[in-house]
Image 1 (cartoon, rainbow, N blue to C red):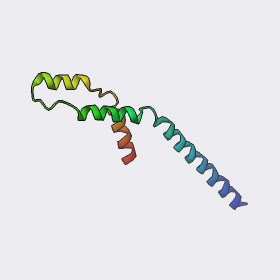
Image 2 (image 1 turned 135 degrees about the vertical axis):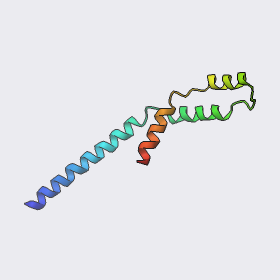
Image 3 (image 1 turned 90 degrees about the horizontal axis):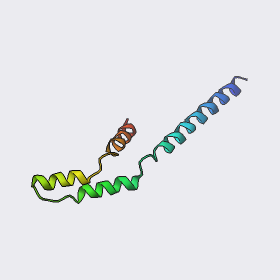
Length: 79
């Protein structure tokens, strides 16, 4: 009888872990990896000029809105 209770508890824990993993995968799609890669490509294509106006133009055309989200995801994965 004790074995049955242990087996049921183990299965319940397994279901909870799988549900948690499923939830993490579902919220992981908030920022499209394609959009993130596109922004990285934009950053890599900045002008090579050292003029202040060119640097300001590069900063104005780069979208940093999703950068914090990606960094938070990376930090979560590392912990």
